[in-house]
Image: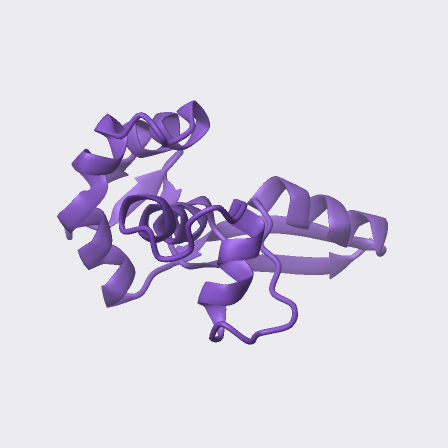
Length: 124
C-alpha cells in the first residue's frame, strides 16, 4: 500500500469523518474491502522491501499505481488536507513533497505515487 493510498483513506476518515475515533490502521481496514473486512494491511515501500528481504528475496520498489478515485480525491481535497490541523505532519510533508508528471500524475521521489505498489522480486 502506498503512502498516497494511506493518505487518501486518512483524508476520508479525518476530514469527512467517515470513521471518527479510529486509528489510521483501523479505519483503513474498514475502508478497504468494506466495513466488515477482517484483515487489511498497508506498508510503506521500505517496510515491504524489508519483509521481502527477511523472507529471502531482494525487492525493489518500481513505483505505484493509482485509481481515478484516488487522483480525484487528491485534486479535490489535497490542499484542504494540508491545511487541516488534524493531519499529522508526516502526511502533510508527503503531500507537499509530491511533484507531477507531464500527464499530471503524482510522483514521490521521482516514482509514481499511487494506491498500490509495483515491486521487482528476486530470490536472494
